Amino acid sequence: MLYFDQGSRTRENEGPASYAAMHLLKWLDPSTGKKEAFANFPNGSLFKNGNYFPFGSWLPAFCISDGFIYVAFGIEPVIYLYDVDPPHELISQFKPSLKDYHYFQGGENAKVGTDIGFFLLGGKIESIVRFKEFLLIAYFPGYSPADLSAFQENMGVEERIALRERMDEKYKRRVWIGDLEGNTLGDFVPEVFQANNIGVREGELFAIGVENPDIEEDLFRIYRLDIAESTSRDIE
Image (cartoon, rainbow, N blue to C red; front, side, top):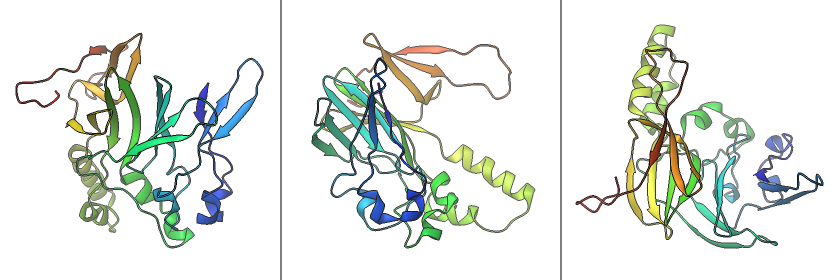
C-alpha cells in the first residue's frame, strides 16, 4: 500500500532547513507492518526555495500506473514521475499549464509561512488519474491576488458571507486533461460530476456526481466517463 508520509508536525516550525530531509511517500506491507519512506523534494522544487510553508502545503496527490508513480506535492504545480521499484528514482517531471492557477509561493518567516488564508484560498492539486494514454488532474485554481486581498479585509459577518458566496461561484474545481508528455488537451469545470472524485477501476473511468445543494438525497450518482476528441480537436 502506498500512502503519504507527513512526518512530524514539529517540522512546521523548523522551517526550510527541515524540508530537505522530509520523505513525502511511504510503502506499507500489510502482512508484515514494514514501512519504507521515500521521495524527498526534488532539486528545483518549490519547497526548496528557502521560504516557509504551512504544514500540509505539500500533501501529495498520486497514482500508480504501468510501473510508475505520478505525484504532485500539494500546491506545487509540477507532476513528478518516479519508478515504482526501489530505489524509486525520479524519472522525469513536467509543469502542466493549469488555467489561472494562483498558489502560495512561501513566506519569509514562520509567521507568514503559516498564514492559513494563503493555504486555504490558494491553488492546490487534489488528485491525479492515469487513464489510457491520458492524465487527468483535478485542482482548485486559487483566488487571484486581488480577490485574496479583498477576502482578508475587515468586514461584517453578512458582508463576508456574501463575499464567500460570490467567490464560491467564481472559483470552481477544474479538471486538466493532457497526454503523458504534459501537453494540454483540455481544461474545464465539470458540470455533472465532481472534479476531485474521479477514479479508474478495471480500465474504466468513473466519477461521483455533483450533489444538489437544494435537495437532500439518500443516494449519490456514479458516472462512467470516457475521453473523446471533438471536431475542434479539444478533449471534451
